[in-house]
Length: 257
Image (cartoon, rainbow, N blue to C red; front, side):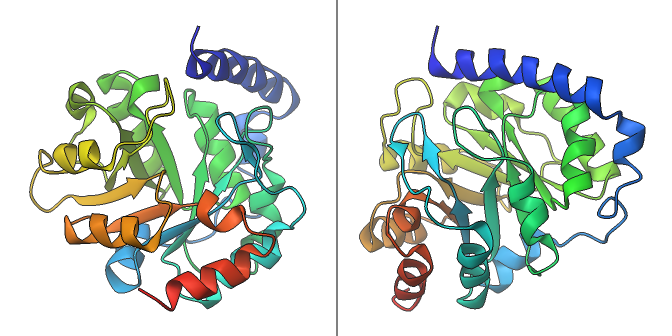
């Protein structure tokens, strides 16, 4: 069983528990459910392209930074030019929770991506209720038909979709309604990073599709390489979060690009 298999197995248990506590109808009555959403597509086109991530830990790296609060970090991300914010809401494997988005939503005016393993319709209503603007669909967790159904549901809820792929075979999950395609530089099965592989995949996307390089961007050189190869967006988390002061790390990085 791969780590991804373990995550999905646990996610199913989490969702069942959440459904028993709060119904979809109750989620629809929350304060954030009716708020207008921000477009990540537009923000990537108009700003520096970085989707800066708040992440405490990961299965591949263990604890990255569990001493900082979401707002102090993500407010700096916004202040120094990020196109969007990514917040991990998976608890068991990434140390996140839904409140990490709720606690910053009123103070942040750029798009927030709920980064989680989305496998059930319930999670989309949950994402909307906590103030997410964008949701992540991971191709390796879903069938092409599920991607299409979930994309339609996200759009119905006025949220955008970032589809994450890593292999050539996963290109078949793409459909014309997808807002952005993220190419994970890290293989979720063995956690190896290969930027060149991502470039090859990007070149197979239809023209005009906004592409986002995800994970494994460890330096300014990596960023510049991917930008030169035509990526529009760059999802970066560990590079900033591994610092004692992620806000300062982002400020310094953004001043160099």
